[in-house]
Image (cartoon, rainbow, N blue to C red; front, side):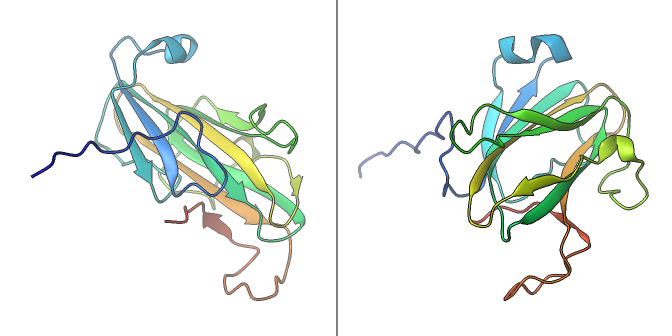
Length: 177
């Protein structure tokens, strides 16, 4: 019997990659300013832009992947997290890894609570082009108590041909697997 090694997850996912890459940090010295200097504890692929809820203390998550716009229109992104988080996107398709922070928050929000939120956890509208792949990344830092991190998207359009979902709802960002 021949042993095999699991393929590694590429450092920078490419458009068309399956899932979202999640880097999990489990270190009690983790702070917002030293996030990049702490070693990654575990890496996984996710099917949703969301972490577990109420499991850990003093942890961090970094998630990254590609968002492919289903229609040329405006989009805005919603955050729900405990305690600190942000989401950024590469809006320049000629330099997709150069990201712009869309929204960030430094306070607790209930898990998946995209409907009762204030504007401090909702991005401005951004214009995206149908079929273009936009690099998307997020960071989450949990201090203590409950923990959660989820991203939703809202599309500013009333109909999209051949799209079976409601459009003016906030939808979870799910990955193609």
